[in-house]
Amino acid sequence: MFQSERFFRESWPAISQAVESPADAARAVQWIVGRAGLKPGARVLDAPCGFGRHSVEFAGKGYKVTGVDFNETELGRARESAGAAGVSLNLICQDMRDMDFSGEFDLAVNLFSSIGYFSDDEDRLLLDRFWRALSPGGVFVLDTRNRDQCVRSMPREERQRFEHWTLRIENSFDPITSRWLARWWRLAAGADDQPGDLIGESEIRLYSAHEMRAMLRPERWSRVDLYGALDGTPFSLDTPRLVLVARK
Ligand SMILES: C[S@@+](CC[C@H](N)C(=O)[O-])C[C@H]1O[C@@H](n2cnc3c(N)ncnc32)[C@H](O)[C@@H]1O
Image (cartoon, rainbow, N blue to C red; front, top):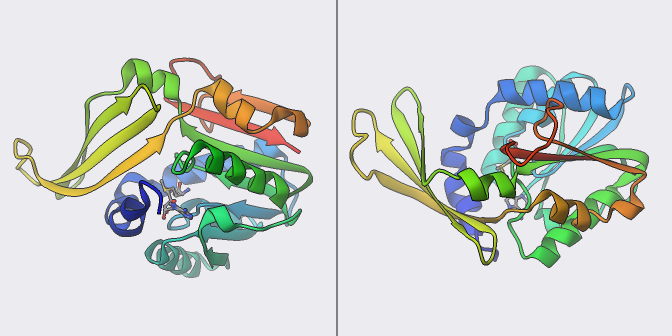
């Protein structure tokens, strides 16, 4: 059991499709394909894949995609959306810490703050698994929150308004552990001044660029580049995102 396991198993499917946009995924995939110089028919690992928004995009471009996630609800949605798009995905229901690939992939992606769920040691071991999954010359893309930007600018509260409800996120950051604690609330339409219903609580370790880069062990990659978004924006203290692109 890890701190956010209950959140991701039970609460996440209630909000994932509201907060994770397929249009953003399409733009990100377009950039990743160009940045990685992916050849036609390349093999892609998307872990965790959630409801498959990136996986389906990659598959639509003719790549052979394996998606890993431990949430059956999300995988069911991925299966459905692949069917609707007329593409096929190899979906595996598994804890990503147990992935055991070896050289099968030309590209591996870990997107939308999908690292930091475990202890630092387990996060490091997860990065090892991505390295091992890649063939020589393969590319790993990781996209997560930029800890240093969060330290300076994390709002105590965030709100996202949807057609019939509002998502309110109560944030706190523990400077001793560098873990971001979030409480996710659902507010009914027109009830913005009410506390709302608690959807769940997550706790995620945030990493500075230098920590994440060191954890990746740059010496075993031929090259590691940093960006501030999945569109080539240069990385800085002020970019909300931290993107690493590493070539094996
Ligand atoms: C923030 S979402 C990102 C999903 C996807 N990368 C995207 O951008 O749409 C995190 C995902 O991680 C999955 N997850 C959390 N812990 C996991 C674990 N230990 N093993 C596999 N999947 C996990 C959750 O089920 C959820 O789908």
